[in-house]
Image: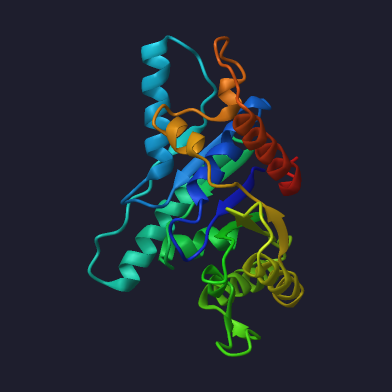
Length: 263
């Protein structure tokens, strides 16, 4: 049975698609059979990356590893009940098709809490939640007191994850391995960085996730997206000359993959 890895949170711009792209390409290079679902049916950043990759391979006459892709569409039914039923059927068909041929299924979620997003979180074996390393983004996980900074309760997103965990437990499925990634961590010490780290460590014990470091803000990630490439691809291109920044970015990818424990 395929292991399902879901990339999700309630906010956009946190690095979900960038992280999902690097994880799926890394798994492809490990000779794993990988399937992908892009549930952001409007923007489809992950599928646009794969389209760019197709074009690069065609233009450069190179062969690069690719995952299996499966499209799902948002229901246009007027009735909410009928709409939910149609999307549940679409989602089940997508998972069935991919599980028949894949070792891993990567699901990239949009911001917000749509019906597809809720279903994806419920089937997740591993849930990866990237967040910008800032107190501003901390409310993704918890509500805090503005004066004291103390946590006063879980966020809407954390409550949804908790509900997903309960549904899996009731179905006697293994618990979700929930990993929160701290993206764009500053290299310099700051009060904000210290406070975010301390608050996340305390919160992880309360609502059941583990912490890992993600990616720094690097131009190389954006540049490579347009070509459908990752740093893992560049290692196999003969005329590539890595810079110190590239080497550091590649190390971030390796640390992330080790922390996710995808075997």
